[in-house]
Image (cartoon, rainbow, N blue to C red; front, side):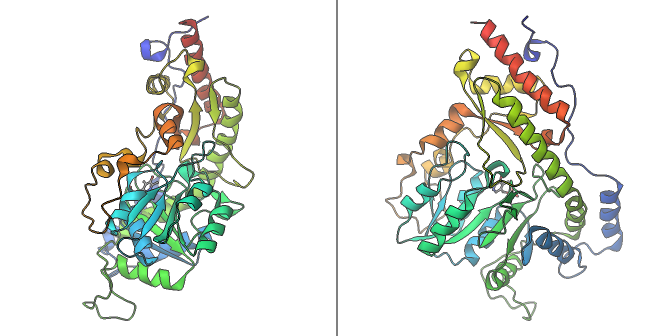
Length: 407
Ligand SMILES: *Cc1c(COP(=O)(O)O)cnc(C)c1O
């Protein structure tokens, strides 16, 4: 019996709302405490920022953490500290948020896009290795959706070619690879605390590292080039004011206390949803290897095959699924190199050689993911109960039977 779809006025499969961010009086009291103290800034007053940095570093099993204004600037701090020079090449994936690649341009370097693995949507180690040239200085890997990249293979390539590895872990707070927290494996790990992220203060970012020199440089860049022990108006490095407020820091300290439990819940729900969706023809969850000891599911991703849904486009499918009450999204419309920014080379970047032409780049796996395959379920929905996962799968089946009945 064919049920009417919610998009056409039928009953909505998922009635529940999934709130985000999650907070209570602890967060309210912590922020109010800072407001009342009158010590809002850092480092000129108050130590809430240093306190959070220590907590986050310990949480990730890293030696150092340095907060900054967002998870885009954090990538720039990492790149500059890693010693990139104008014209150097940095290998990046094309299936990610714009600043993974635009941070490279801001450093007067050349982003080199390489394709992703069709089963994980993470940067492909083989593709990295084939893209290495004399000018390659670093690799930015993105643990997309919170699923760890193949870090053993990537670190092995980096050692063999003497390259720096920056982990863009903006989706991967508390996620793990072989028991190790993501962000703590490469030279620098970079995180965002923007509103949608799994750990948030509305805005904010952080870098973590075990390397004393990278730490000192990123700390200096964050604080207008000042150095430890230097005078207030002495500036040594090409940084800027990228500092966060004390209000953000105490909010993050409160939110961090919730992170382990929230991550476990998303991880368990993700494993369960994998089972449920694998049983539906035309739906394939991304591959999760045994190396993935914890997935943060900032985005739960599955591959959609329109041919099992009566040829229904991915866009329409995602709209129907959202109407059924599943917090989902059709994902990126294009791989990054297709963005007008790259197609038109609309850069304030003097060091990109004339022969670099993003019009001729072609990463077929990323293009397919954008065009027809990838559907995203968002992290706050992954904080639901097991019964909610069952309802998500039911919503998919409902659309499928409606489309098949239409044939
Ligand atoms: C969100 C995000 C960023 C940028 O973080 P902001 O804090 O929004 O600047 C960088 N990389 C990825 C993969 C992201 O999803």
